[in-house]
Image 1 (cartoon, rainbow, N blue to C red):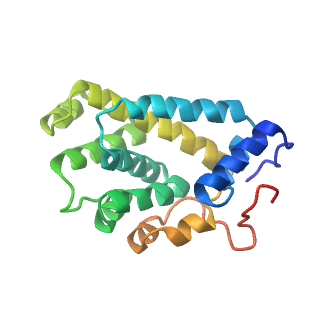
Image 2 (cartoon, rainbow, N blue to C red):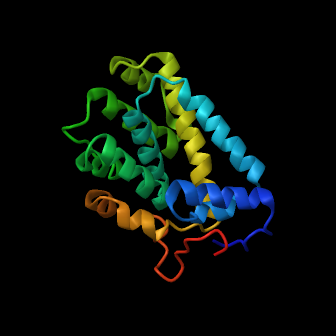
Length: 203
């Protein structure tokens, strides 16, 4: 990333250790967020507050993140969540959402959700009441529409921070992503190379 690593403190070390425990390596984005561990923890708490009480399915949440990341051009979250969507659905769905296409495996509800997210990320001032009617017709109630929009906006802020400070996708993410996901993510920053991919707290 473009910033120098922050000075090691117990709070910074905790972020690195949590990333290592969760992913098996210290993610590049963790090094950027380590400048404000309290804010990073606050983001995680807000995410949990939003998603834990939402009726959106895990597959729908993955579609929200993939559509948000792809529309913004964020390769980091696109690779990470493209793999999650491939697991929750299949590679065809993940590749389609990341490429702004539709898949036969997607429900009408999922297609409407992806379309809404793309529109709100691309031009939030260009949305209309008719867009919400399309979501309602696909089965979303107003609470779910609000939740999906909040989640997309949350993910947008997260992606902008990572991308603006030059956090490149981890090589491990690229190598673990399904073929359809890797092919679809032809945008954003390229993944770290082997020499810069570090796997320890002290690296």
